[in-house]
Image 1 (cartoon, one colour):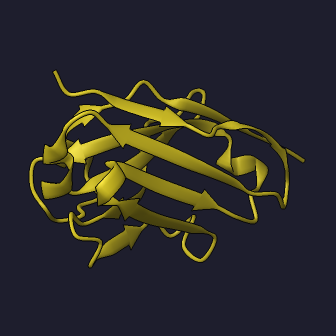
Image 2: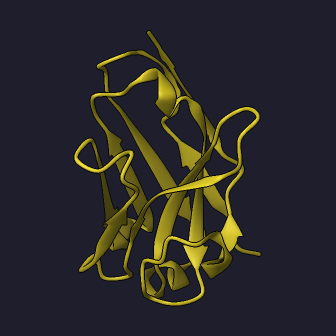
Length: 124
């Protein structure tokens, strides 16, 4: 059973930073892309960022481009999301997901395994 564990969420004031971590339970993690999605109350889940299996390619949503950075450490089976210049609109539950293949797609249908999520709250 694949297990993804997110951590690093919390409460921060606007303009602050947080770093989310996603740790995978299996070595197969290094052969697939990983992404972050988020879901705010009353809204659909949306794509945030994705990284290819070897970290050669990344993809970001327009709303976070220039503020968030996705990276991975395959030796530790972990993907990170560094979030800077946070704004209240970034408030959501953030989910980590691993894909069926190596490419960093933005569509949720390309991801098979999901974590339980970590709450990020940004106050104004």
